[in-house]
Image 1 (cartoon, helix red, strand yellow):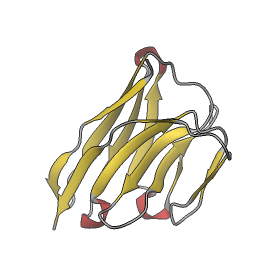
Image 2 (cartoon, helix red, strand yellow):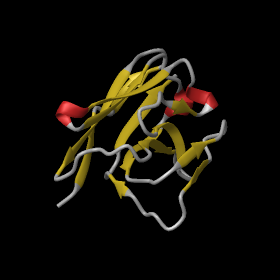
Image 3 (cartoon, rainbow, N blue to C red):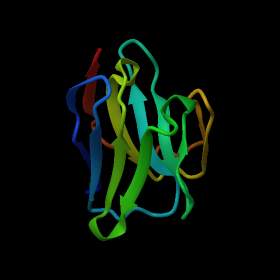
Image 4 (spheres, rainbow, N blue to C red):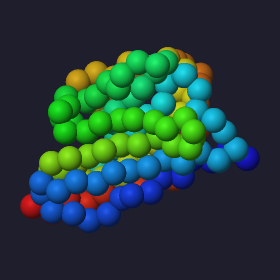
Length: 130
């Protein structure tokens, strides 16, 4: 059974850091689009950081220069290093993979292959106090 399990969320103060992990079981990350999404209360889910192929990560404008996506193939784990956290970073963070091809816009809107559901984790909560 394919599973993605996120961890590393928590409650921090503005300016602090967290590192999220997404461990895959029954699955090895392929080169199709994978990465992190965020859903704030009352809002739609938006892309935060994505990787496709062997390329470097692409980011929503709001997290550029603060967040870094990376992966460890030996551990089948995807990471999101989040520095200088802000209250607006608060939300549930989801890991996703097998998204086909994808493109993230500056506002976090993600255009991706149609008809491909992908594999999603259950999410981990990040709360940033001011």
